[in-house]
Length: 129
Image (spheres, one colour):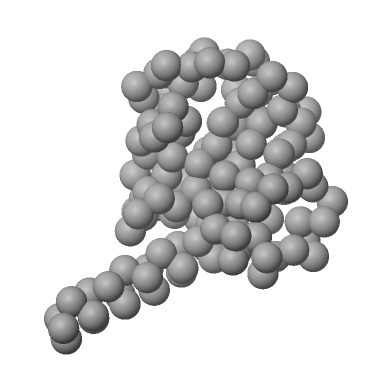
């Protein structure tokens, strides 16, 4: 479903009720796990940033997506993700079957760690180079 929103609240308001409810729950879980992160619309979907892109989410016809944005994090949690429809760095789910909060928190925390480590390596290489 096309959405040309400029803010996350506006994006969510344009979704069907069931998708909006599922994504609001996902958003709240992400915010709790990443309280220092910021929200933007990037590539026409809500994106959470913390030392770069962290995660994103979107509603589509018939499903919602949670964009983990890291094949490495997806691979390191492959066993827990087996029950879900996944792609390289995305988890798709039905709006009436939201992802478990504990799984979302775990993935967000792993992404925070990954982004912070990458950011530290960049600062270190610039300072030494």
